[in-house]
Picture (cartoon, rainbow, N blue to C red):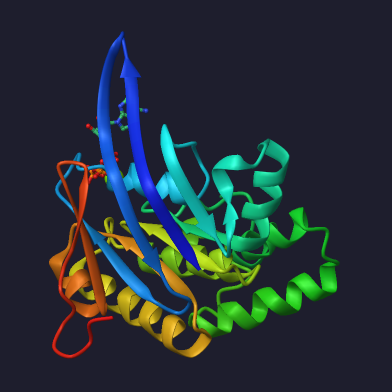
Length: 230
Ligand SMILES: Nc1ncnc2c1ncn2[C@@H]1O[C@H](COP(=O)(O)OP(=O)(O)OP(=O)(O)O)[C@@H](O)[C@H]1O
Ligand SMILES: [Mg+2]
């Protein structure tokens, strides 16, 4: 499903070259839920952004369902991302002028899906994430945890092959964090959505079956929890 092959990434700043990721190599299977850990500045967001096609790697390859995304041109990549990749941000990134339902529908607008079908799909997902009664409200009228649920529903609306989340609970209190992780685990188990979740929180990593960790730009695979290693 996801194959990261000898990925290296460097940033050039004022003539100085900093290598953030070194020869990172791993695969994620369909239906897996993986936590990506690492200290601040270890390159987690960089790796996630590369895997989601938000930037191009210096070296190496990223294949999603067998397709090398670094080889695609702008248009191909935009099209591929639209139907295959979901992304959940730490700060939700909802559009304040749109209702909850309209925010969730938006990726389908870009796909040219008709209003009636969009509405039905958004309503179904919003029910699923526990926001059936808030569909016509605006993001500012919701709590942080509820806004993150909206952004989760939005990330799933196109039924992507894989969803990347960058510290999805980073702005939430412990109780809400637990509820969001419960929801992600439920979506992983019932819909077989593949998730890669960047987190600082050991609590989040403790609950996923597989943990990978970045250290000094290199990837270290943690052993799975009792009997659940891949
Ligand atoms: N656009 C950029 N230009 C130059 N350097 C960058 C850029 N983006 C990130 N970096 C550097 O790459 C390194 C890794 O950054 P990254 O954001 O991937 O870390 P992170 O593991 O996500 O950290 P955090 O946990 O704080 O979010 C940092 O040293 C950062 O300064
Ligand atoms: Mg980060």
